[in-house]
Length: 111
Length: 162
Ligand code: HEM
Image (cartoon, rainbow over all chains, first blue to last red; front, side, top):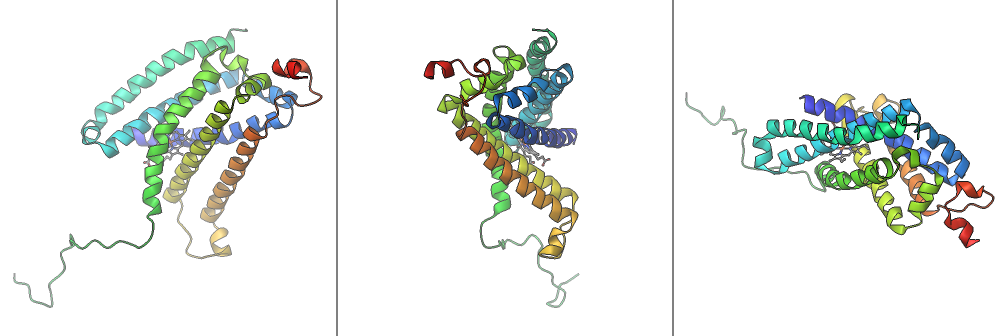
């Protein structure tokens, strides 16, 4: 049940980011200045933490989505759905351990 | 107890399968969510790796970075596929969620439209079509060296071409 709740919440969250992201990218057709001004906002600390949350949400949705697909199409997946949920959580932690330090250094490193 | 003709009831687990005629769109939507999901894992992880992890991560993003990528038709088509697969997958997911939480109105036409369900469905379709069109135009009409822009904001190959 919780995997379903999280899948739904992360799906909606990523969706609204995607709507905004298509619009901010469209600014490359307005002018380099307009695009750079808006993209600069992505580099401030608050947005930096937002990007970490976004990657966390996408990472969960993607891994759990693959789990759903295995459950739907394979008997193995259906039998081991619970174990696979813990595998999803483990892979998700590994993903974030790989991404977070590097990303936080870029955001807070002052480079 | 013995059955006679008047009280006999059909076995509910009848072996006769009644199907509606026509394409089963709901089934193909279900298949699409799974097929596009597999593709999106590859496309999104590649997208995040190149833009947010490799190089200087988020700090490298600017007009010149985008111009450098879209100078190659590989990245134009890559981003085109990402746009369409992700937005259609997401919108179809939102459609499912709207169906789950709001009751479809019984009326048709304007009576259908002026209900929470009708408004949300219309907004969903309109925003999806507008953003797919906008995004596709942006990718394929992109000009990496717009006239009159300061050279330091443009990719280095602009000054060579002039
Ligand atoms: C990274 C790769 C992705 C995978 C493997 C994936 C997988 C899935 C799957 C299998 C479903 C179907 C659930 C069902 O029918 O029961 C689903 C639902 C959904 N996805 Fe994705 N998805 C991915 C990316 C995305 C993206 C980028 C978005 C947003 C634009 C998104 C938004 C949604 C939404 C809103 C739903 C509906 C959730 C629900 O019905 O509870 N997904 N996803």
